[in-house]
Length: 188
Image (cartoon, rainbow, N blue to C red; front, side, top):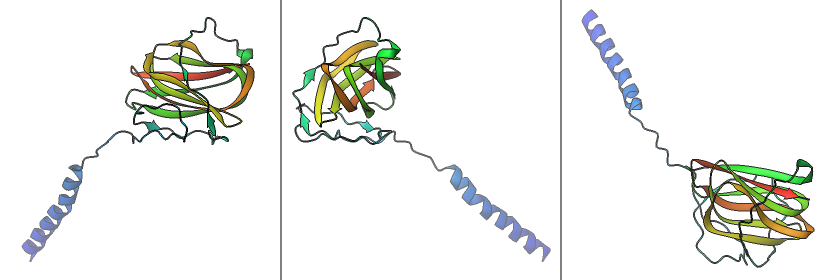
């Protein structure tokens, strides 16, 4: 009787170990970030294939959707000689993109009025597809970067001498190195 009890306890112990050894063999597969196509509104002026992107949700819901697209502007890479003083900066926001994400769509919420919008690339070069600047009246100005790589520096993105209220800016870009930081600065 003692022998049967000992054998049955031994068998129970072995059976309880089997699921643990099976659990140790389970692998977690990481597939990376979810990619999707860039969503554009009717009338979007760029007529080329846009890259598959990782979409970052905006931190704040924006108030205006593009109603009318102005003719696109080709980015001229005009370097800003002097960085604007802090007192002249009306709004500034930034996004850091890592190389593992690839093409990333992000939206920076401005909701401010200014005269010039600047692009500041730091922490490494960035490859930029386009920027969509949406104004308070629903007009949207698309700046076409033509998927070119831009090295670190501050550049003029748009200059509107009459002063305009920028609701938000949507960009599609990717880091050309390990990571890149893209900042937008609205100057009065």
